Length: 456
Ligand code: UD1
Ligand code: CA
Image (tube, protein in one colour):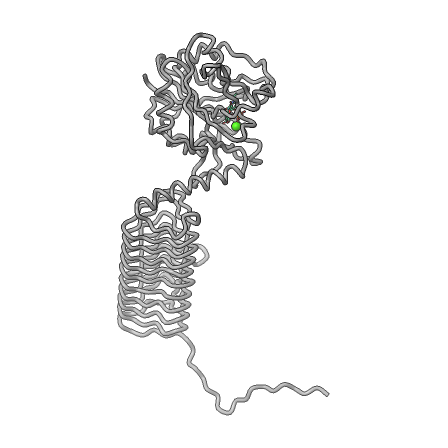
């Protein structure tokens, strides 16, 4: 049987107290909905139908790149049964339908596979035993233990409220039968909604067996209805990721104080101190150490690199054995060749530092090409911006830029040249020469400091 997935994502999520549609709230840097889509894609469905309503346009816009999605609009949210019904005309006859929610992001593909296996003749429900079943639909079983129906919390009797086996919301069912049973349901209930869960009663009535699969891990079925629940799901997702990274050999000083919002690849013996945030696509070689409070985004880092505390690195390529920080900020387009060093309070942007070059303290290096073994002193600024346009600075191999110098771009400092401390360099410096623009020091003999006048 071919598989058709229906993701319900039409709800507003009032309790989020946010203008953003609920399924666009981010988990580990990506919309909730994308996590669900990733998981169902592992089941290789023929198509994924996403039912949206509230904020449909922004949801579609955000996921415009996904070509395997069939967008279904549910203009009015009249219930989960009504939502599924909107997708039915697009389902292939003879297929198996899997219904899940866009705001329940931690479900595992294996759990869904187990559910699908049980759904050949009728609905298969994913259920769970919970301590506090309030708010959930309860599973009603007959004396022999067979599922008879689901009763929603709002409609449950006092004794039914005590049932602790709940409906998680994940349902698989042959599409053709689902169509028949969905046609039979109405909204004669407390909430005046078309309940998808009423399909179960209809199936039993038609003599079909209703299968159930129990989900043991409560995280998998945790939905996001509030900011607090979003935060909980985030911690859970991060814990799962940290676990698998450590399994793969990453040394996390404290897995509870590490966040990955993207993909991290790494070699052997990499160590992360606490409070590191990694985002986008980051690749590390072997023996990379990252100090506390660092942020690393979309970067490639070579072997034996040391990133020291409080450094922010984005869109950067760092070759082997470089050292960065503490308190360094490497902005997009920065390239550090092997053995380069960038120290505290140094900002770089669109700049290449050649092998073994260093900018150890308090510098800004932007739109610059710096050769090998160059020393950039404390307080050096490449003045790359004239208020309208950006200009390049080129510094040759073995040059020495004295402290507190301003290199006014466009400008070239030749190989082996020296810029004396405190210079404002506005013209090219020839190879091997010294450029010095500061005023001569004066010494005034006999000069005396003013004295404080005495007041009577
Ligand atoms: C639903 C189930 C309940 C189950 C619970 C698990 C029904 C009738 N009840 O209840 O048995 O225990 O989930 O969390 O199915 N949605 C739409 N269109 C609609 C209504 C809802 O797309 O018209 C979407 C929502 O965006 C949400 C999901 O369906 O993602 C569930 O809707 P919600 O209203 O939260 O259902 P519950 O009342 O919690
Ligand atoms: Ca819900």
